[in-house]
Image 1 (cartoon, rainbow, N blue to C red):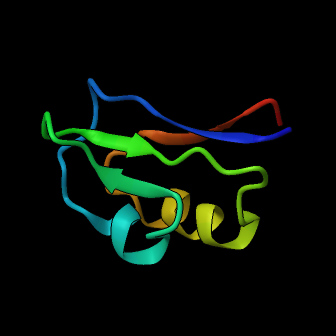
Image 2 (tube, rainbow, N blue to C red):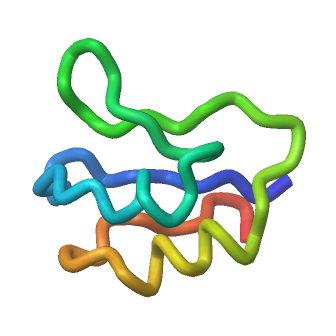
Length: 63
């Protein structure tokens, strides 16, 4: 299964991923982006987050 991955060292916490794919991305209590545990990730929404990420820190694992 394809799973989205965020390279936290490159993430600037702009929040675009949360805006375009709120079911997938969330802000953790520690203040970093977290991937929600889902049985299947919505490919269109994750691809939109990847496309709009200003630091290109989101990718697919297992693609």
